[in-house]
Length: 157
Image 1: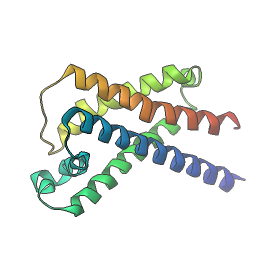
Image 2: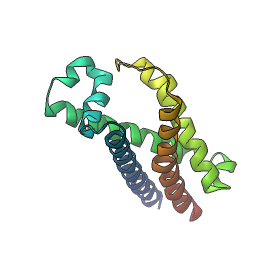
Image 3: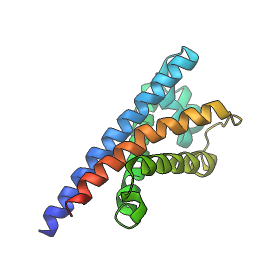
Image 4: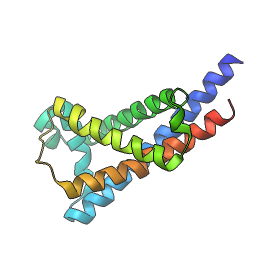
């Protein structure tokens, strides 16, 4: 029975992480294209540049793949953390909208103020409009799917 529960948790995390990661990168592509008119695929080498630096922008399709892998690894990291916290913090189970909003904001703060500054990514100055858009994307793309999947998984436990 414990193996079945672990498999079920693994499957829920896998689905939630894949859905959240896919919605997040899709929103990022759409926002980038609308705001710049440029090919949104440049986002993936940008993500890869966190590890590989400026080489990621001149290295071709391999760095696109690395960027996509890193993106999903990050999405799954946030998913695992959420599934860990959800049964342990009671208020997360009270209101899906509040939970999604708080987690999306938390992810934005951690990524932009902790994680990205520790990488080799070239950072631009703070832009309030872009920060608000990024927060809204994370609320919709990360917060809501994870809240939905976790609520569905844990309500039967």
